[in-house]
Image 1 (cartoon, rainbow, N blue to C red):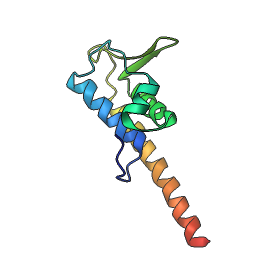
Image 2 (image 1 turned 135 degrees about the horizontal axis):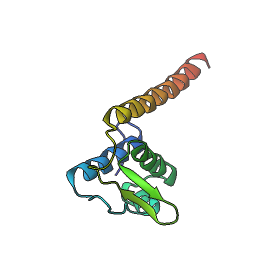
Image 3 (image 1 turned 180 degrees about the vertical axis):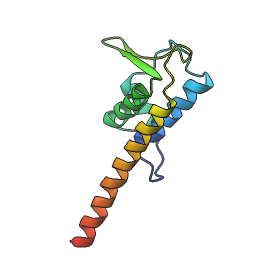
Image 4 (image 1 turned 90 degrees about the vertical axis):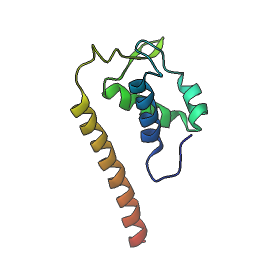
Length: 110
């Protein structure tokens, strides 16, 4: 379930799925639950779940197969993307903070 911690829900979901992949709960080749199932599991909207899965795709942890689903990549054969994943996550966090700052500034002006 997504918690109201101030951290975006899609990052919380991505963190949990990433932990399951790295911990072996989601084994290489295993399908991720459907977007609808993840949405129900995390009590989050479909768009939030899609963003989380997209982040994992960018990190190289999962791969989508058109019309079949999203599967956990074999981490031994996956390229080393730790740095790329960190940069991607940092970009996302900076964008989220920028959006939050813009909302605060708008309230202060209004």
